[in-house]
Image 1: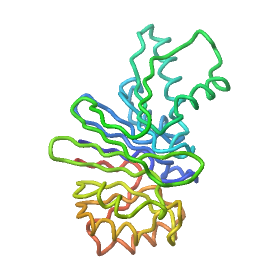
Image 2: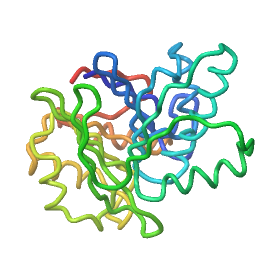
Image 3: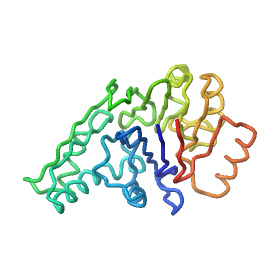
Length: 252
């Protein structure tokens, strides 16, 4: 599996640190892990045809993880229209209520009643296969206003886990179980001290040790120079921990 970091940041967009989005590829399968605003721009920088995306995983409904998800649908529709091509189905792997939110979004941004695009919404906790990728989603504690999900993606003997935004309100023992022996764990560190809504560097270190994670990619980090420097100082003697930067790639 190949992972490309499209955006490693938060809501505070900088030219070198876009909001959260990652592209996972295996063979002909292309899966977006979150689609924060700016993800389409990053994909266009890679000269990628947006219609090559097979599925989009959405962890939760904050714009820095979700903002370009429905724009992606409309962009694919227009591209097919320009080239007189049939539409190809796009799958959303997502929390509950995503389909309802799409219909509300359409009322505002895409009101044409006769225009349509083939979508499949797979909501909540589930297991499924996407090509040769085996996918499991699981509940994540982030904020009380909506439900959030994390994802486990397996290919042969390799395992990638992405939590999306997660806080101290999430049961730590459950998280150890979900991430056990992961080849790559993608987890956020937006907090300086434990909070119900976000994780800290110290919590990530404890988790990787308890779960025997091989590598942990620290994502969703603040763009300020002093914050980035703090993370680098924290991980400099911890080879398991990696600070994510936009346009990084990894083979898993």
